[in-house]
Length: 420
Ligand SMILES: [Zn+2]
Image (cartoon, rainbow, N blue to C red):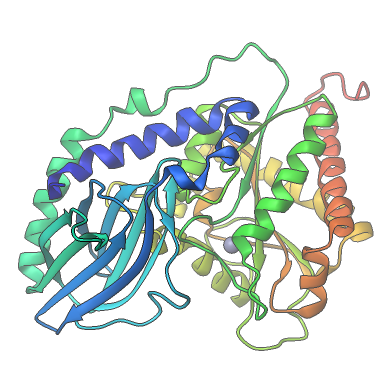
């Protein structure tokens, strides 16, 4: 219930992501059977007050513990709670009141939900508590915010961060890997977004987070079926994973390849806005559209309320790393193989091979590509993206590109090239 308790909770998120995700598929799939009824239900969320003092209230089926804290640039208030079932009225959080512009909610880890309030300016969490249910009234989560100046806000933030660092797990704990005696190469499949970050949304309501998860699960099954690879997923259900955790999963488990799966959107109808595109990492974007997309994709952490103060990661620094040279060449090698395969199975974008500064592609030692399967704003693309047969064909193409990648990579290194 205390505001300070958040440090522990964030620490747990880091460990849970690595420990949980890297484990075998059985544990991942077990998450799916989690019955909704065992979790408290949120039925209503409302805002009261004005620009000097604003109260945020959520009605709950029973009391829960909470941790509330603030983040800067942009100003946000994060409320972490145990996993909730959100049965809020439609459009909840789309508009605000007082010190809150809007809010989002969703699963941030297995067992943990999060609510992110976008604040209009610097605020302080004055009170954060949960009231027991009385006289047939639901239990209530209450967070009171007061307006403060930026200097005070930053001072509070520094104190909060100190407490959080003290409680954070050590690097050794965080980088714990699962013991592995299987010599087959490990592929990390990364369905973008998840939980309170929906990604792009089609006019008809389909969300990128769901489209790419369905696709990624199919791809995983097909890759496993070859018997040649181990596959780890960054997520197998609807929860959010910070971008740095996705990269860390690939690095600590010495993945041979990371494939991040996404679906793009355009604000206005654009004749070029269709077909699949394959992206690699670069400091300077290959064109304006690639720059726009990288910016949009990199916002995921911000949307989900991830604190980035401990994550200094200039793409430029990584690119001058010598170790990166080989990785970069391998990434391009796979990207080209993928475009080649997609030619026969998928609609390709007019310029299907591009690059930009995607945070999820920044592992210096793991070849990584990001695939935009198509545009959810293009009706024909959306039809393909949600079609079982197209998904099957496109996933087959990726499997084929993976096979080509490993065969030719080995050949290039002078090893047993033709044996595959
Ligand atoms: Zn995306």
